[in-house]
Image (cartoon, rainbow, N blue to C red; front, side):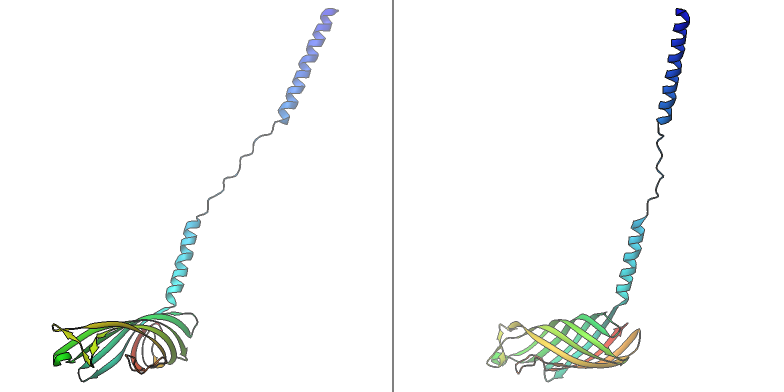
Length: 218
């Protein structure tokens, strides 16, 4: 009797352990593998966007050169050239900058009635706004800080020491307003007339400035 009781107890324990193991195995959760995500190539997209922005900006730029400030007389000659770059903000309105470079030459008699000749290059950094009226006309306003070099005068004559002309440097402000006429695209030409609103009696330049202009994509 005792033998049958032990066998029954042993069988009961085996069945209990099996049930526990089965339940434990069912409660285990398998780890799900996360799907691989493809890396986006944002670098090439950013590069393309920047290239488009650069191209769009470059298409709004126009270029040109002015020939002007032409004067000649007894012992005097001047000739100016001004490389120009403009940015078209709207269809008709532009802002820009130019550097005026004026060649100046004079000759005559200085102090002690010595003959002399003198030449220099005047520089005038300039900013401007330009509004195009139709296809052929435009108006322009500009500010220039002109930097000059001239012979130093004494008693109404250039001062000459040891055969050399003594020089002086100075600056003047010019505020021009002008109107121009021309045409052509992408290459165009125009003529313009400008007046210095800050004109003074002792100003180095005359108030009127005549120019011939060549432009690209204006």
